[in-house]
Image (tube, rainbow, N blue to C red; front, side):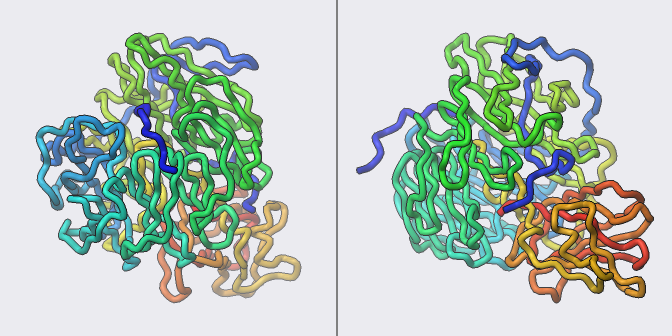
Length: 588
């Protein structure tokens, strides 16, 4: 991330189980493996060959999108499969102080067909060091995604399927175009409030018609993150080191130096409470009231912090990030890992000098085992992008030195990896067989939070379990085996339908419209029984999220993309039907 030469600013979810791999991910090193020790030690270079050979399923010529164009992923044509939108920023000789706008947007499906282009690419643009103010999002709530961007000094809404102009409105300030995010500050149940920011000093919250709700001035960092921390149905906002309430008032401020480079939310220590982890000059974990949980100052500059269960042998979640150690001509960066108590357990010793600027990333279920794997790219000196397991072993190495993004593009319950080179090509890779047409359902695929609040910086959250706060009911229940036992966190208890229930089903009302990205189901018996999971916003129209067969007592995990207030699990017969545990995970 570019160091800002800043101007003066104007006057209770259940604890995560390590087996529940709904965690978010980040990267390990390409040339320096990480070594676990009580005291951080220098690392040896990784040995051995990659274990998963990536299969190229599509190669897309993106040169028509222009130089410096970066990628958004989302279903813009409404066929149920994610597409690619390349966003070229406007030309700027120096974007350290004022962010760029959008010069051109070019949409492709993943087979390589250009869907549309809005704007005309500028040949002067080669690269940039900031966010680009564009997103894919269903802003009007009609079930189909629009593409929004700041173009020609206006907040502009384009039809996702055609790229045609829909509407626009004026910016609240000439510099309010560094980045775009979406939130729900008014408690409508939909993230249709708009966040705009300048480079470092001010944020504006707008309604979906462009009317300013409130504004905040301060050290707002690179990218804000909205999340409902208190469960009142209105999101708060982490803006730099300030936590803002839904009305823009400051709830608390972190005592940290410099500016907030990165942030991630999640239950770090497994106590059932959310933590806010911030990276800047140091890495600091807070509770939701702003109290410091731990502080680690063993890095020079903490970047790209992401929470995850990277070490299942350790309790709670780990914080993995990038340390920008030395940014001189002979400089170096390195990755680090902090445990749930704030102690450093990994530090990378990169042997390559003079090449720094590494970017960590994440990929889920690349190996088909619903595990979290880690990525690193942009390392320079010929070091190629790679995927690693939690021990730092290379799992996959790519032959093209590009930038990596991930999404389930094949509908196979696994994330694919897109390796794109600015102004040239985007290559879609899968692990094993992948049929891109299998995800073409004809029904629009919802855009989830990590995609509609995309940032080149690192901001996000560990998925939360929505189910415990909901109201569960079953189509029937045996005595002492009520529906609420499936969400009590105790796998020794279970919901059991009545023996003569001809169509057994279990349902939870989540209380409000929720994002659903993962399902973890534990059967009550080891008997074979088929099940189907659906979601609905109104209990009238249902959308299938996934289906499967219980064949044993082990937990089954499904990565899904859905939006709904209600989640229903239906079984094909009553005898072995039932749930010992269910987790409905998603951002909030």
